[in-house]
Length: 145
Image (cartoon, rainbow, N blue to C red; front, side, top):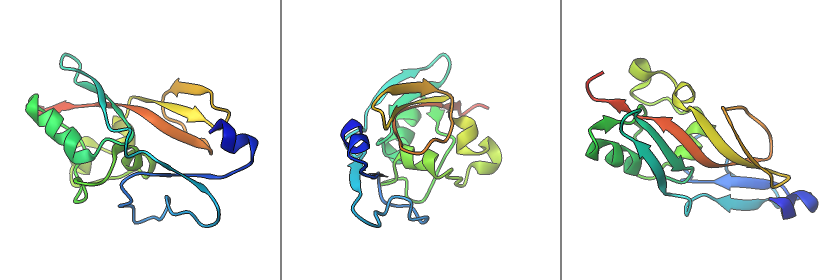
């Protein structure tokens, strides 16, 4: 990010490439930043139901992680086998659980991002140009709620 910023190169973040909005399609000579290798679940707290995951985690893998622990992810999409949670957050994905759990943005507690100046930034959600998601903090919901 620092190199691209200093050389005024645009960066396009790509995940699962399942988006219908075309937000991850380069249009000129942008550098593509793939989140596919950023696919780890960093932490899960069963007491609070909070999950910390990298932006490249596939939604289906997160759902399985939650299911194995008796929890449910508040988002479900047809592309869950290939879409990534970072892209789901970036595009405000809705899915079939929207009515019960609300928007995905309402379920994200915070994120860690790298700004174009290469400085890490952790906060609640805000939209800034030239920001790449690195970690997301998502709440899981218990099946009993």
